[in-house]
Image (cartoon, rainbow, N blue to C red; front, side, top):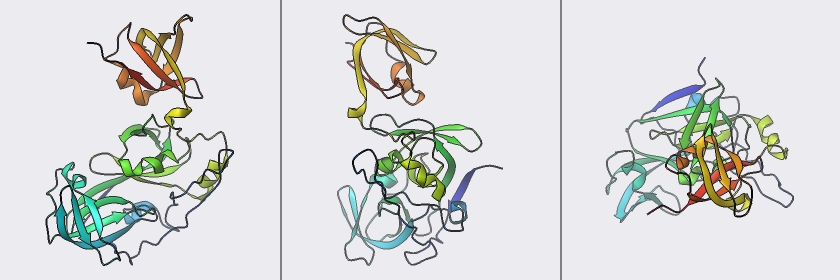
Length: 279
């Protein structure tokens, strides 16, 4: 049985008052102080996300494009304030640009952030992946490595508006990831209530910010080989570090003698690298 499901959206989107109800948001304190975790809801009560083609807390708002202002479309949705849609949401998918008078369906998540935009009657192809993050996100939270329930690993870019939400998912917690037509993660939710409790477990690491990593500055002595690199710091013995798969592409063009700064996480693995291009 496959745990990766492909969806085809048509004009039959649920409305804001439709069948997709809001799920409860879960807020918790974490990390010695009070780090508030919010905005990651659960799967539909009594329903799997694959039945509706959306994740819990998502809803679709219909509206009319009133005008185009540079790189944004102003949309009247009947709400107190108009919605402003970035034009690049459609441009990067190769879809026609919005124009005045277009009727659109805007999918927003439980944080009221835009997940997708389509013209009425326009098809979209989304799929969900039931799985876990296999490692903390690299600096910038631009990509994620997911292992599905079938044991297959997938690497996906993360849309900017979804990055903080994906970074809030602890490594190893079971979640449902919504993937769009560009193979990007556009939303995420916990698989069930039991997974929410895992964020209280200090062993379940969430993706840290760049400032939380140890920095190792030195000369690259041995390029990437067998997922490892060797670096020599000034006046110190050469050290070897394992490089997480999510950033190994950054090392492919680096050679011996290159000055680098490695960002090393709590497992002593390289999660990002900075370097100066050779002339």
